[in-house]
Figure 1 (cartoon, rainbow, N blue to C red):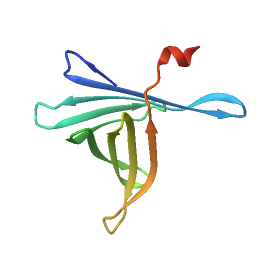
Figure 2: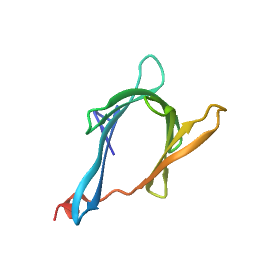
Figure 3: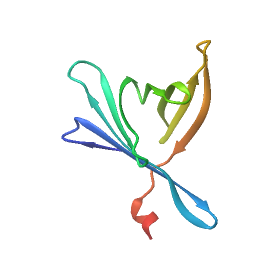
Length: 119
C-alpha cells in the first residue's frame, strides 16, 4: 500500500503465490485504487489479473473498510478489510437469503521487502 498523488489516492497491490508441483506460481494478482469521490464518500477501483475489474463504494472507519459487490454466481458479496497488528486481514462473505453472512474466504497478508523476495 502506498499513498500517491500527494496523498489523494491509496494504491493497493497484492500477489499470492503458491507452490504447485514444486514450482512457485502466481495464483492471484490484484491492484486497487482507493480515492475520495467528490460526489461524497470513498470508492475503490479494483483490477484482477484475470481481467475482472470494478468500481465500488466503500464504507470507511478507523483502520478498516467494507464494500459490497454483486457476484455473477454467488449473489451479493460483502468484503471487509482491516489492519490488525500490521497485518492486512480481508474477509469475503456471501449474503444469504435471510440476510445473514456466510464467510467464504479469509486472507491475512504481511508486507514483504520486495528486494528480499526477488533474490
